[in-house]
Figure 1: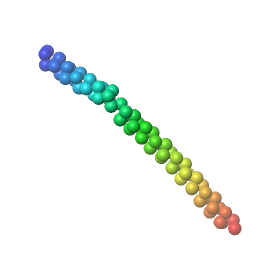
Figure 2: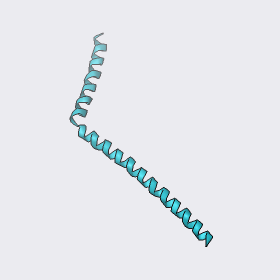
Figure 3: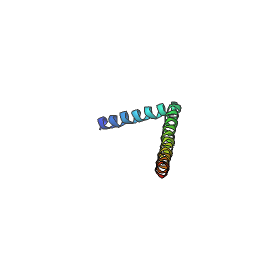
Figure 4: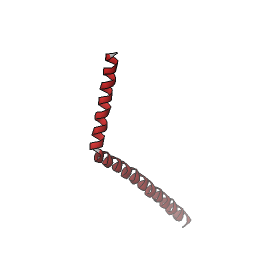
Amino acid sequence: MDAVLGIFAVIGHAIEAVLVYVESHHWIFGFLAGGYIFYLHDRGLHARFDAVDKRLDEIRKRLAIEY
């Protein structure tokens, strides 16, 4: 029984150590989250510009055919 309690104690201490690290270094995770949000925004912005470029190319092709 002592071995089982010892295993739970080790797991509990490991979880506590991780939580203390996250609590004291929360700004690192903030930078990571902010960077990921910027990455997603940048991808969405480039996708919009690509869609506009495709639409302009389509319009140019149609105008070239008509004249």
